[in-house]
Length: 91
Image (cartoon, rainbow, N blue to C red; front, side):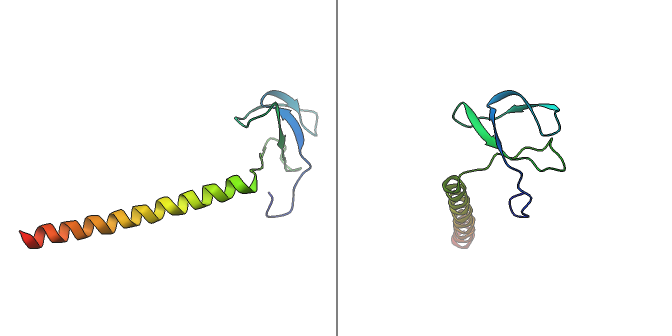
């Protein structure tokens, strides 16, 4: 929703409970975010979808942690291939 520019103004909803959306329909919402309330973003065409925006720092840490894990996995695959080659050549 953020990328395509159809950001609907968010409102504070309790971490667990029921809240009215823009059409007056009551929706249930649960989230593990810290704090008594969080900001929820809803697209105007489908108010049943709720997006909880992630802070940029959290997104950055998640991206770098994922890249680090992919790199370490690649290193382990190469290491195992080298160890298998050494094992078979020493025979």
